[in-house]
Every structure is written in structure tokens, then in C-alpha cells.
Amino acid sequence: MIKTVGVIGAGTMGNGIAQVFAQAGFGVRLVDVAEPLLDRARATIEKSLGKFVEKGKLDAAGRDAILGRLTTATSVDELVDADYVVEAILENADAKRDLFGSLDALTRPDVILASNTSSISITLLGAATKRPDKVLGMHFMNPVPLMTLVEMIRGQATSAETMAVASDLATRLGKTPVEAADYPGFIANRILMPMINEAIYAVMEGVGTPEAIDAVMTLGMNHPMGPLTLGDFIGLDVCLAILNVLHDGLGDPKYRPCPLLRRMVAAGHFGRKSGRGFYTY
Image (cartoon, rainbow, N blue to C red; front, side, top):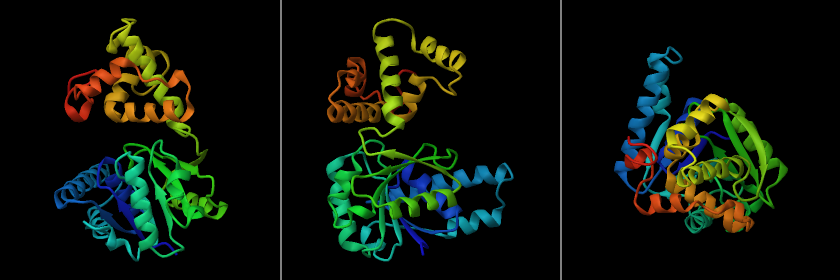
């Protein structure tokens, strides 16, 4: 019986994941290395729930109950009695493997360990544990409270039972689980990142301005936002990291990151979070 869910990483994705679990009635322990990060995450969650209250989707008592189900901690040791864990730390394979090894030693043997990775191999993460059958990917979409898709990634050793429990959990969160195999980038980023990369090549080669390229994709292809606006929103550093995973993992030159993308990331122009990318914020 899953009652207490551990979420590790209080960044954009982690706080959104913590929020949706708390909204669905689970006790949530949100873990990150420093208290200020946790304070910021709680403030973000309060603001997000405030918007639901304004829109009449939630009353004040409901909001307070959700916040009451959320606790924070600065050590993973606080997850010793968690019934399910979702990892949402930075997109770095070594850091994730170290964490999964620690979680494997800490949590009960029956506990499922999920990763919110957008591109790193679930098989690789599972191999860092003694329970690879209980490791899977749960790739939420940003912003987590609003987006309904959860990409469910089955590693080489992930059991059918683990996939079923996790998919049922996603449904209880009001999400739609969609299964993907454990190949670089899974489904979402394998298709999305080459599109963003190609849009950056089009800028570099002078095919069109960022505004023109985004207008073609929003007005002509009915995308809710253009690929360059979306790249800025995701973070151009994150886009580059995922393209590197695709390029290294599949060895196909079609995934080669655009030189302009590399240059912008080297300059610290990451998009919305740094104040400047293809647009100024």
C-alpha cells in the first residue's frame, strides 16, 4: 500500500511532482541538499495551488490540506520508510547512479524506485541497485501540475508488475501513462529534440529569424509554442545535454547538436532561466 512518497530534487520538476502527489492524497517528503531550495519549492507549490483556488478548482481548506501532506528534508535518510520514490535531480548519469545505489541500501526491498529522467538509460540506473526489476522511468512533463502525460520507461529488467503499479499510480495522479522502451531520449525527446535542433540550424543558416520560425510552427503546424520558444522554456543547456545523449547513444549524425546551440550554452544563454536565449526575458 503506497501512502508515503519520497521525491528527491526540489527544482522545477521535483516541486511539481511533489505537488501532484500531495494533491492526490499521498504524504510527500521532498528532499534536497539545502534548506533555501526547499523553501523556494514550497513557495512555488503554494503559488501554484493559489492559482487553482483563484480558478475555483480548489477551496482554501483543500489547499491547506495539500500543503499539510508535504514535508521537506535535507537528507535521503528521511526516506527510510517511504513506500515509493521518484528521483528528479540534475540530468547526470553518475549522480543518478550514486543516488539509486544509496536508495537501494536505504529503502525496503519492495519499494519501487522511479526516475524522472528525460533521456538517461533506466537500465543503467537499475543496474546500480539490487532491485533492477523495481526501477523504471516516470518522465513527467513541465509544468507538472498542468500537463497530463507521463512517459513510463521500462528498463531491460523492469518487471511487468512494477510497470502496472507505477501506471496505476500515474492514473491516480490524474495523468495519462504512455509506455516507452529504454532507448536514448525515449519517445518524447527522440522526436522533440531533433525538431528544436533543426530550428536552431535554420536560425544559424539564416533561413529565418527566431520569430519567423516560431510563427511557421505555431500558425502553420498548430503547435502551442514554437520550437525556439520551447527550447528557451526547457533550457538550452538541457536541450544540449539531451542531444548529446541521443548522439552518443545512437551514434547517428542526425542527432549532432547545432554549433549555434553549443555556442549559446557556452555563453550562458540558456533561455528563460538565464534571462536570454533566442529571446530576451
